Length: 103
Image (cartoon, rainbow, N blue to C red; front, side):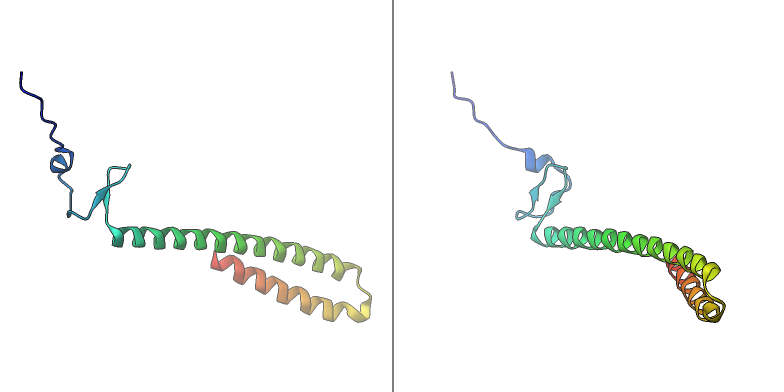
């Protein structure tokens, strides 16, 4: 009986094999070093975007709390300070509107 020869044809069966330096990854895609760099850059970009969106959302919450506090301060302010407190409230409202328009 002749010994069996094992032939690995897995790479030849893949229609999306790009080059001999490419290697399959668990997801069924083939990446090369350039693809890995691009994928890493994309991950970094997505993480930065998530962080920026979280910071922006926190900023909007702080502004909303500041506007509410400024309204309360305006109601309880002495007559001589009301103009200053009103100007402060308007500036905070404008800033809140601007931050809301951004996203």
